Image (cartoon, rainbow, N blue to C red; front, side, top):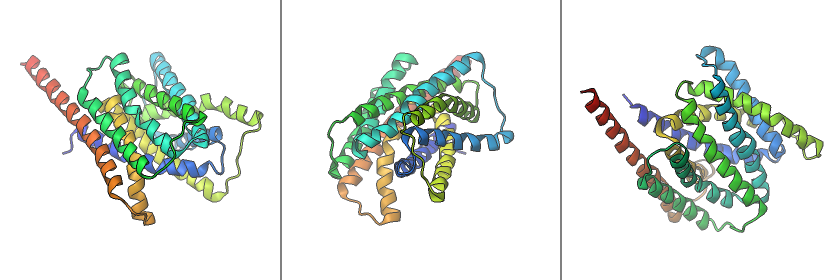
Amino acid sequence: MMSEHKSAIAGLFAVAMIWGVTYVLSAYLLRAFSPVLLSFLRICVTGTLLLAVSRTQVIQHPTRREWLLLLGSAVFFTLIQQPLYFIGLQFSTAANASLIYAVAPLATLFLEVIFLKTRFSWMKVAGALFGFLGVLVIVGFNGLSLHVSIGDWYLLIAMLGFSISVLFTPHLSKRMSPFSISLYSTMVGGVLMAPFVAGENWFGHLDMHGDLFMWSLLVAGGLLNVLAGLWWIRGVAIVGPGTASLFNNLPPFIAILTGYLFLGDAIHLTQICGGICILIGVFTSNRSLVKQVKRNRLESEFEGN
């Protein structure tokens, strides 16, 4: 039977695969929807799907403290990360976005040590550096331009918003299930995002001209977001924010594999080397985590005796 740790890692790999698909999907949907509106519509679709199955789940209602944690997480993830990511993509490149988000594991690791008082691990830092190197190799091989623009600053703030938002999950998961956290986070995020959609419309920047195909893609993306959100929250709760964030480096490599399998795009040796570096980074970090889990288990058994 698969252990809790192994099942969490498997779920995070699945999340990375889904994100590899939804990043491309989101970039395509920007042709039909403006950035803030797209973020809000994704939240609405995700919330509708979660509510549809909520009767089959046991829901833990938030306490006053947990409402504050949900609000804090939503501010950094929904109000900062999502809109600025889409806005940044309009003024920057996919290569720059990949590199900036490849720094997220390092940022999360240091924030985790500072705010969650976790033990500093050089193995995790080494894993994050291997992941960044892998993304750098993949992006550099494609010959994509890496000039700094205003979009890169938006992406940098979005990345920091993401890194900070995951720090709230370990506290929320002490009592609430992943489904409950995802449901209430989506509700809070939708309420917070609504005024910004109104503002986008007020300033004449709201754009919505999607056909049935685009709306179908939006719904499909919402379904993927539900699955990824549940597995991501569970993974962060079990392995910690720093280790979970390392899986953010996998989507560029997954995009290459997807292009090869479904589009017939060629895969080159340098790209394979980049992917191997990313996988080594994930493996290195998780090896450190496995040792820590075993150490904690032995200490618990010793205290019990």
